[in-house]
Image 1 (cartoon, rainbow, N blue to C red):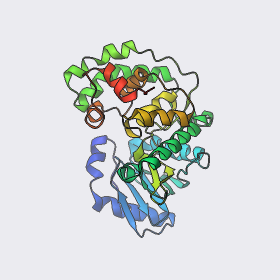
Image 2 (image 1 turned 90 degrees about the horizontal axis):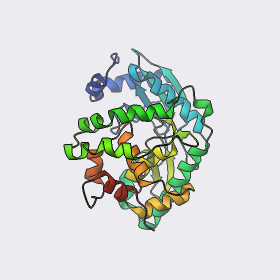
Image 3 (image 1 turned 120 degrees about the horizontal axis):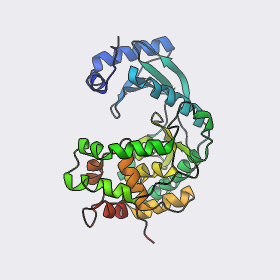
Image 4 (image 1 turned 90 degrees about the vertical axis):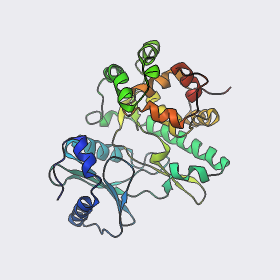
Amino acid sequence: MLPLVETVEELDDMVRDEALLRPAVMDLCERLGVAVKPLIRFIEGSLPVYSVGAAHVVKLFPAYEELDARREEQVLSHVYGKLPVPTPQVYSAGAYKNGWSFVLMSRLPGESLAKAWPRIPAAEQDRIVTEAGETLAALHALNPAPLAGSVGPSEWGLFVDAQRTNAVEQQREAGLSEPWLEQIPWFLSSVPLAAPARRVLLHTEFMSEHLTVDPDGWRLTGLFDFEPAMIGDPAYDFVGVALYISRGQPRLLKRFYEAYGRAPFDPHTLMAYTLLHVYSDLPTSLRRMPKPPEPTLDALAKTWFGIDD
């Protein structure tokens, strides 16, 4: 039913074809013995993901992301039951057809924190930030050694160097203007990113879009999307925290650090990791985050990642 997909461009074309995807998901679920009513597509994300009935979620991966499917399965199994908030339980995973892979997992209760955030009273927002900080601390406290064979990179320094080499081009492709692009090489060369004292299991996109919350009492109910997990510098995960949870509010970022249990990272370190992040898109961040007092990366670092005393 599903065609072989071997490139990002082919996937982009196919994921919009609901008439092609839905019968394939129904076929897969029938093979797995899972009732498909209701079958609802999650529109967010680059991969086809469906809620199946009231209790299941199925996520499909094309051929070129087979390793990502395996990584998500293994990381979910590793973290299940070990964090302060629920994570999906893996029920089944493996190959489907024409190079496609799947992960069938439990559905988390609640709704997207990103969508709910504007409706949440300030006091509850504070508590949610605290719960999120405790959750990330628990994730980083887990022993990543059992995942070393499937979750990279094997050498964090080599990963950082490779990202540094491609940083300007990555932002250029995202549409960043030349005055900003010109600052990137100097800024990155000015920020020493020493080898982390301890490499940890990174979510890599620890953000409100991947957290769920119960509107009845406003408590976190889940953390999902471990497909891009890595093992590396804990600071790398604070990029998503600052851009998508504290959202440029120093008070909330400070609260997150306190719940996590560590002193704040140097803002310039987090700005450097923002530029080096696999999914970095500085133009989007510039549109949605507070405007710096001047158009420099140094000012961005202080505005987005600084902490009020």
